[in-house]
Length: 163
Image (cartoon, rainbow, N blue to C red; front, side):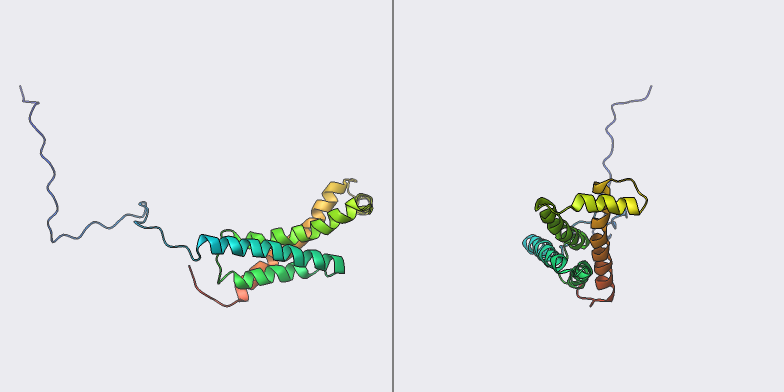
């Protein structure tokens, strides 16, 4: 019969000359890297891009400058190297879509036949006469323009700092 009450031995401590084990790829880093910009600065950048981009695009829409969403995206892409924001590449397209939606909504509330024009456009295109779908497709135009502008600005813009 063997003795089961024998105490187990503790593992030996590493010698002082041994280097500590390197973390494996699955372990998280000891400290998270510092973000490129403090939180208030990032929030301010998002708000300025959203408010400014919406105002510029809305004013351009009223003046018939249909290409301004691209320029808003380009400006956001060029400056995104210096002020890193979480999902900053989505801020300019949202501002551009809002900049087109606000004047369209104001015109619709003012009595302009926005729905009728959308239904006529759908009929001419051979689509079902859903005004909401046509307006949604129309709002994709500034969104795509701004996305292309952000991409172009980040591609050709100055390198700035890397995070």
